[in-house]
Image (cartoon, rainbow, N blue to C red; front, side, top):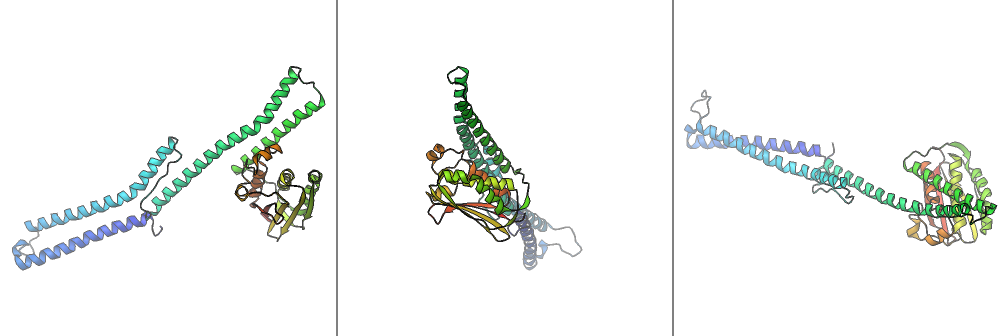
Length: 355
């Protein structure tokens, strides 16, 4: 029971009320008998053995009883108002929330009632999270619909053209259709991974590996595409044994390198790792153009792009970095984006070496 808890307040209030009533009884009887014996002894029982109270004593007993009852009622009313006010506020806010008012919040004027205050704070936290999730759901639905609209429109138009004989059924057209289908497949898989991560069901198949060697192999795999974008690799990967899901970490590295390929200007691309035996950290830094601080704070959220028009021109669903965050968090790690020493952006992720 906390020092400012509701239980403690209840015990203290009831104890104070009982003590006040007992003091009232003792003081009242003492004063009554002191005055009666001094001024008019006939007001009290004439003998010690006379047990029935006199009329004056009955009046005293009734008066003290009424005063004690009034004190108890006033104390109970005052204390019950302190308890009921936050509960009524929560009840009213729940009713408003049930009718769709996501701005409903409870409040309390007395912070000394620990449990009642905690109830109000927990309800407000729940309401804020529900409001945020509802807003994110609307944003997600709009963003997903936007991402699906372009490939579906292209597929529909070209398939309709094929059906009506407008387009000749040649290899180039079929490869174009296949590319649109592959893009849709990647988008669906990305959404599936994010959904699993949000629900806490993103499973990992961990094993102990030399993660630097795995990352080096992944970098070599995508190096031709990076060279085509005129990015020169500078790789520094010291050996480090890490327990992780290798396939997922490869996915993270590919997403970060692909992000650099799409948006970094031609120049050096530094890929370096650090390992202290407890934590493995990988950093990928380019030469520019960099990311504004207000965007960098949210860059790992789904559908966030630094330059929306440029990002759409260069492709990408806006989910790559959100996938990175989901996978790294599933490993118990963290991600970061900050300004690099070269004037560009530096993306990092860190995961514990042992789970």
